[in-house]
Length: 215
Image (cartoon, rainbow, N blue to C red; front, top):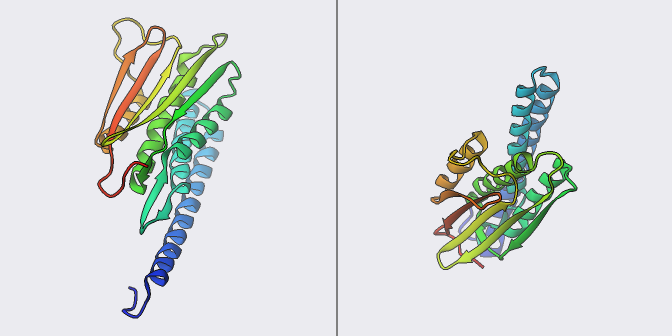
């Protein structure tokens, strides 16, 4: 606890130092988890198990990126959301290795509370990752678009593709979509999926955390 004789600058510096220490430990823990999952994946002999473990690695990586983007601003933890999205999408594009699928980013400047970062990182990772894995079979090229729009009381986030879409009458499904829906609920938003003919669009409107504001 800060002494009564501390000036505000010293108290904030100690608080920031504690924050950096915690972030360092979290980063090391996430790297350890990712390494264990990678080792387990190399030992797996079943294709389904290997795919599942790669999915776990992707999710751990998204959470790690979220923690790396948390800054201490005005006595609270904040994240510049556009920067976070750019890094996650860049990582996914690099690991997918699909030169025939481009990704367009159209991102407003939005500042969110630090506690919103991990759920949003996972939501973006699932939505973009699913599009790269399933929307474009080998031989089909296309374009994925990620849009972030600031609103009066929060922000709208959408991921759309012009891929194969869903079979007529088939509801969107899959573990990745379930994760994205859970993250949207945690953010007090609702994930919607729309057939765009061609392709699919996932979108969510998120109210701004009460301790921060868009900017």
